[in-house]
Image 1 (cartoon, rainbow, N blue to C red):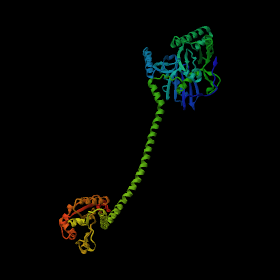
Image 2: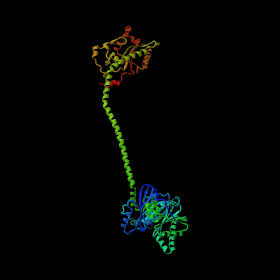
Image 3: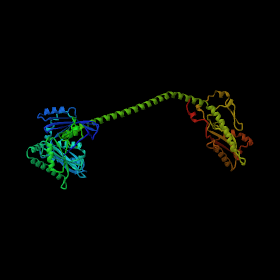
Image 4: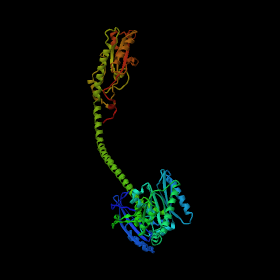
Amino acid sequence: MKTGNMSSSHLKSSLQGWARGIGIEVGTGTLRCLSVERKGGFLQINSLSECPVLADDSENQEALRGMCSDIPNVCLGLPSSSITDMFQNIPATLRPFAIDRHVQSQAHSIGSISDEQVIYDYQVMEGMNDGQKSLVISMVKEGVFEDSFQMLRPLAFDTHQVTSGTMAMLNSFFALEPHAAVSKKAQVLMLLREESTALAVVCGGGLQFACTLLFGSRNTVVSLKSDASNGRNLLESELNNALARWKEAQGQDFELSNYDIWITGDGGSGMQRFSDMLSSLAPGIEINMLGLPGNLLPKRDDTLHGELVVPFGLALQSIWEGKMTISLLPEQMKWLEHKKREYKFLRFAVLMLFLGIALLLAGVMLRINRETYVLENERAELDRCAQLLPQVEELHGKMRFQQKKMLPLVEAIYRSHCYYEALRIWQAAQWNPGQKEASWGIYLADEYAFARSNGKNEDESPVPPRNGAPTANLFDVQEPRPSSTTSASKIINVNDLRILNKIYIGGIVPMGQSRFKVLKDVQEKLLNSGAYVNVDDRSELMTEQFKGSFYSPWLNFLGGNSSALGSEYATFLLELPLSSNFIREDVLRKNGN
């Protein structure tokens, strides 16, 4: 017979963080409480308490309150004989909701046998064959649960879990013997009690079968005092029946030829006798002792404590370290316990939500403050600009006023420039050395002088003549001008000042078929100069008074023969719109001071 041994005083944890829990085993005549703490990825046993189970529940509650002080998580162990376990092989691809419906139907079929309500839970574990899973279903009557749970109900524990001693034994086995638990070789675990023995079969990391044998430590003691063959026969019968039931559940082709046996429990002196019986019944089968190593306890020793396997497994499940997760709590209590367990995460989530909202609001406030600061600076800048606007408008008004004051002078200079350019361009257009026929220009005036000379009552330009002197055309025909006294009294209104836009050139051309060509050539040369936008013959604008006054010098040259103008010479009057102007129309049109 082999016994396990652990050199380390700590067990590694599969989870991180801190947690404390306690396992309470009731129903074997002794009330055992074992507390476990998870810290830094390791498990440590903090305390171990034992006391006899009393008939008075109030005294049991006081004992539990003293043993479980300041420990929030509690797992209570029920006797395996009061729990019904079912095992089924299911396809690995079966979906969770289908498993839920199947387990619910199984529980209802079991509960329909009696009038009492059934509490059930299940767990899916690794199967022995590929493509299959092992479905473990545990059920207990509600009356049995109430009888065992009434001691814990008045105690202010935060978390409750209830499971069987068999599941607690498996939790200890997976934690203490991890290599054997995942082996493909079947491991038969036997939890020896006074009246019965809980048997479980583990293979490939999953629970494959469990049942209760009607053979306990009392039978072993009786066998020691009387005929040992009776006890051996009873044990052999129970063991063979249990293994036969497992073979039947696995199928007809299943053969169990090689397996290991693990013995644990509180059999006392009968444990060795029980082991000897098994060795004689199953020769060649390796018998092992499963127990909590003494070096893990607060008071360290060198022995294996089989009686502490169940409370240790319960303590592991109380802090969610156990491989078995079946908890036989009513649905309402299970929901409340889940709510309590998840409350800290909910509280953390709410805290993070409010923290996120606070950070978001802080970011929004910072952005608003930053934008407000920028807008305030821009508003201050706009206010300063608004204060300068009246001054700018005043300066613009003064500039416009000064510009308008200069308009008469600019206009006078501009008109002289226009006359000069017109004479220069006309001379270039007239001169053609190889041409026999030519035209002669005898009249040059701006649009306003032409309107006055042509006998129309148009307002003249406000530019006054110098010293009241008369103005002359090309042939020194003088026009009467106002006297200096009248000129001095005339006020120039710059708002009514007219801008020169046209020049008129009048003249004669010899009669004949070529006169149209000559006049057309002159018009093209004037237009190609770029100074004018268009050149039109506007002879129809000339009145008889205009012709008589301004063509009289040419008539004197012809000897008074006025008919020559119509027979030998033809008159023309060209209208030349200026292409550009030095004076901007917007300056003239704006109202100034």
